[in-house]
Amino acid sequence: MKESVSAVFVTKKSIFFIKRQNYLSVFPGYYATPGGKVDKSDSEESFVGSIWPLSISSKILHALIREVKEELNFDLIGAIQSGLVESIEDIGVAITPEFNPYRFKNYYLKITLSEEFDFDIDPNEAEFGEWNTPAGLHAKYKEGHVLAVPPAITLLKTFSENPNHKTPIDMSLPYDPATEVPMIESIFGVRQFLPLSNTFPPANRTNCFIIGDERKLLIDPSPKDEHELKKLLKSVDSIGFDAIFLTHHHPDHYEFSADIARLYKVGIELSFDTLTRIKNRSGENYFDGITLTMRSEGDIVTKSLGHNVRVYEVPGHDEGQLALAPDSMNWFLAGDLIQTVGTVVIQAPEGDMKKYFKTLRRVIALNPKNIIPSHGIIIGGVNKLEETLKHRQMREDQILVLVCAGKTMEEMLEEIYPGLDSNLLPYAEKTIEAHLKKMKEESLIN
Image (tube, rainbow, N blue to C red):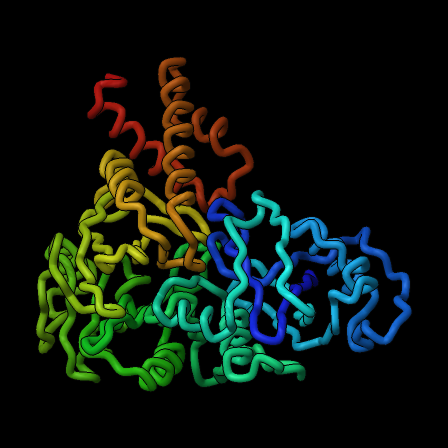
């Protein structure tokens, strides 16, 4: 596991956070304390002086000095010598949970300054930085304006209650992995549960959500088996829900949904296309005894932080796929339109590459502040959507050249996906076929 370090700059009344750039590969668009990973080149030379916490290794401290210099152009040694730094304290370690592909053991070091410092922030790393009271930043989170990892939220909550907190903070997720599934709330009001599911590798979990102020929706409950179902239900019971909402018909988004609906005596909301495809796959009687509500473009399903949450039709990956977003566009719950773990598969009969391109462009134009995928973490901004669209266009251009050169499907697979696992070749072929269909519809090829 990699190690990293975070600098928690504080004064007697304020705390400093940055907002990471949306195009970063790790935690894009997240509010965070400055810092980064420990490098092999970081020295292990010991420090002299009582200001350095004895519980932290010299290598971590050297990484701290380097990171604040790189990100903030801040000379920590010079600031100590000038008296600007009053103390440096170990306030806890956070280990990224195993469900996140980016795993770190992160050391949080509280650096108390005698006054707020005007940092020279690296624009490649941060969109901006701000000094605020801990209570002020925590209030911004509770208003839905801050996207952050659980340890950062815990920091804000702790310091908002006691700005002079000094002892190590417990930053672990408060759940029992033997009986519950993990839950994070990176955006306030969007509770993200992470049950194991029968999904497409490399993902092994499908995000399940509870949203809504008063009328709460449980979205895409799809645990992989009855054991995981029990864990999920124990986790969601503490919040409760009034209805189930399904984004689309793929099994890793609706497994056990009917059982849950009958158990809790709630209805299921979905598109008519999704209803038809689930019945074709799981039987005409799958939804027996359950009140069904057909949802389509523009329907208001609940409120989130006072804003109406509307339905958006987002075909491409799946013809009947629905997304949800508040009128504030603070977030866009996109289903399988995008993933931050793995790749979205576009294949017939439910997938359509032409519609996928159109849907991506539409959501980009809506410009939601955050994108919530069904697999992986929430991401800030639409940069990932723009990169996906660019990549799909690049792939289409590549296929067009190969088709014009008279290449067979087998030859295209070898050239486009060299060394691909043989188990994944059928999906790659379906993707090429989806591109070919789009190009024929647009008269690019015969």
